Image (spheres, rainbow, N blue to C red):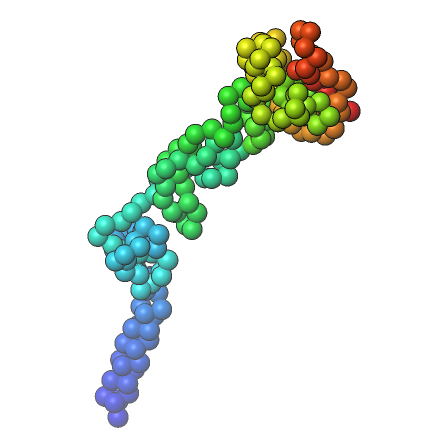
Length: 199
């Protein structure tokens, strides 16, 4: 009888010790076992870690260390660059590409702004102050005949900015461009210069 009790106590002690060891066992470290990539970095042959399904292993990981986003490029009035990669569902670019602004424009809070003023004399077609023949193109036969150049080109020789740029700048400032007058050069009576004010 005593021997039976001895073996019973010994078995219970062993079982209790085994349970304690099982309860204290740590979950294996996925990264230590080689599962150190994301799903984006293993798009073709990734194997999930059985203990953490966000960790992957693959033989040819496509790591993404680019830092520029499309939003960051747009904030500087630039297009995204050609080379890109995906990290955590976000597309990153190696660099920003070409500028969205045309020559003579600067970037202000993600918007291309011309260096032209918001009011003054300008060159180009304006409603109510068109060139002879009411054309919106830079070529005008009457100016060509009289000046030897188009109305727009003749106006630009005076150093005036484009009317389109003045109107855009005025609107960007929260106001509206208003035509103040039309003026001509020489004695031909052809309207070549417009004057806009920003109200």
